[in-house]
Image 1: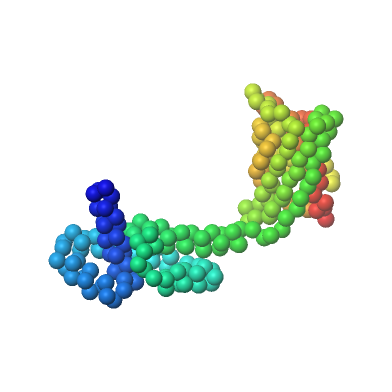
Image 2: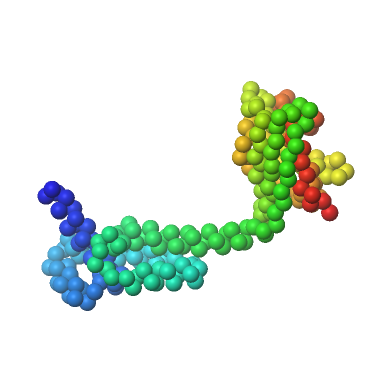
Length: 228
């Protein structure tokens, strides 16, 4: 019990030091705490740590502006009463929160610049080789190419040098390989060609035999309807 009270007191002390460091401590508490810090090298060291953490956090978000709604929410929360220890960011909390804001804003920028919003969908039908199979694929255009999320059921897992391979095919019959896999659930494939030019998606069964051409053993076939 005594140790618990000591831990709580220590947490309150660090919380107040954090508030002093970021300028949010109430005036009536500031004077008393500043006097204690001046008389204690240990507290002075802890305050310096808090100040360094805040400076690091500010550097992390410098030049990265969070969305207006997020800034408004953060500002509103900062105006709430600071009496509760649980609402006070301590050393790691201050840095983590600021870095999280920076990561959120940067993530939005990367997403917006990396994708175009162009998307196509294809339902995949079985062939005579796999009459019980079915699947679907979603094509999303990104700056790196076309990301293809494939999810199929009814295909057994292939191992021991056997695998599935996905292809995009043009209306002229030209095949472009877009990836291999063993299990057909939640597969991510990539294509450097557009489904507008290569609208048909096929999945074949393959063997690691040194022959890079399609085996012709189709197990799923579908089209995006995105042909030009």
